Length: 339
Image 1 (cartoon, rainbow, N blue to C red):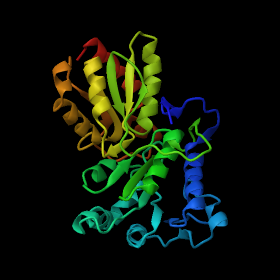
Image 2: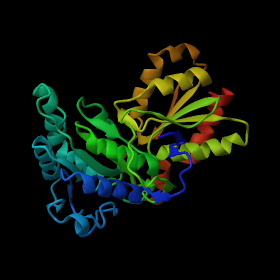
Image 3: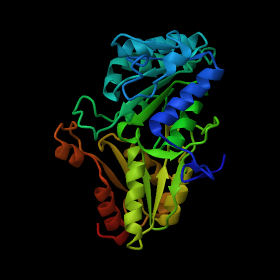
Image 4: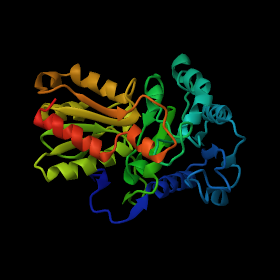
């Protein structure tokens, strides 16, 4: 299906990210009995953020399974079910608590297919809300996606809008590898054009969300939307940002990124996770190791979260992670050569 800024051409219907994810689950569960949902409060309650609302009424408690408060148990159940031919979709209520399931994900899910020479597969998806902006403080606001990017055998997906959320989730469920599906909490209520029919987006297809000629901005998740807002502001000053959304962090389709940097000669990476060890470092390395290096007119900049836990205080919280104005200020300086 042709895309334009992440949306299908000519689509008129709008859904929120929550609605798009729920529709994806509902549509795939209706045609594939191997797919089931499992997690804390995913049944009658409908999930911590409402993604699974109504599914237990439609498919029953055997396919929409409420679990005890055990993230390791959720991940382990998904792995076991996937190995026996099912396609589980697990939910971890907050990404912070994925820490409790790391042994299952890192030592088991990620390695089983390799260790068994492809004779066993682990077709599971682990959905998890991430990010700050809700006043949920240090233990409910983290962005830990790069931990999983570092683990061979796992795929890592971060949609930035409702259209991508539906298409990427359907692809993830049909993939024969374990997929960590990271959903930013602030994006749940945002709307985009979403076709009613089922469609998929490949799990390694970077999207050019906005064309520009002065600066390449590679952003992830909610930062894609903030980068697009920054681009609107800077357009009034005659500065054109090209905004790139990887959508899938692993495996990464870096060709559009390299092509864009060759065109603009300048690059900036924006993500919410802390700067040290964040995904931005990988993007910078890819650029520096590619033919784009010879086209750079300035150092590649990283705009990322501060290396501190997320504060509870709303003002401090906002100042911990990049906001639209931070992107505007850094992009302006980079384009104007003020570094």
